[in-house]
Image (spheres, rainbow, N blue to C red):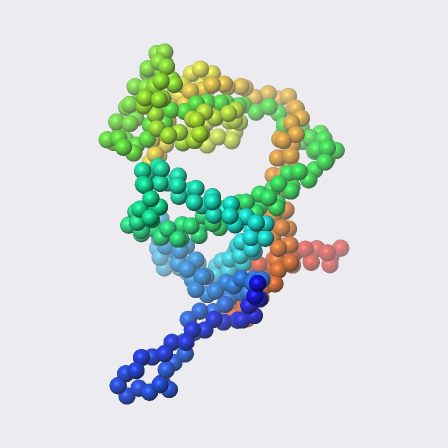
Length: 354
């Protein structure tokens, strides 16, 4: 791979001949600038501006004033550039780990799922629909790519490593010191029947239909048959509509509240899921919490991971930066360097104070 040792990208634009103009009157214009070089990659000013515009447009769509948002984004330009540098390091790490093909497959699978959900036959037809709604498919691909790369690299290099790091002795010691964390929680498992708003006359009619179904179910109706005849694709447990045992504490409030006090074999009242539809849950099992502590290795490992993850992630990014060639242009270094290398400076200060 070539190592680009340039600080600016120049494109030469020549003015077309006009009456009285000579070839010497052509002019050279700088249309882009390299803000930072990150190993063999570069962060350009045009990329920074695109990111800033995307953030501003998103906030404006949520009802905020453009001038106020633009002012805030301008003030945080250094943070944005630092994030883009870290993002570039993650992309390069993913490539080093051989994740490119898997990431691309995951993106394509997301598009296939959207095609199925909207009954669109070809990818180009989906792209046309997206463009018709002022959504650029390429922008979506790039957004998903960043999300998937971050999730997978962090999961493999940080979460997985930290999860398996404690040995048996450390697990036991942590459990003994934190027994209160490992009492048996209240758990529930359920199967869902979902009625989507899409394809039905109006939201009120969907809610009324859900109420009728609950009455039938509580009167002895066959849940599986009613779900088959009336239900749409599950949204809580997408594969089969059935969720395995879950801690009540981890459930979304919209779902958790209707489940409180519902015994195994009973049904919730209709649950309105905003903009999507109405949900009915059959409780398959409901177990009360217990104050007795018990050792569960996955739970102990997860608790340790939760505590260690923030610091482990900081160290991971710090190591990526230390192992990389990062050159920030003189114009932007005062804005970016103090933010980008903040953790390294803290570590250096801590060592010097010992």
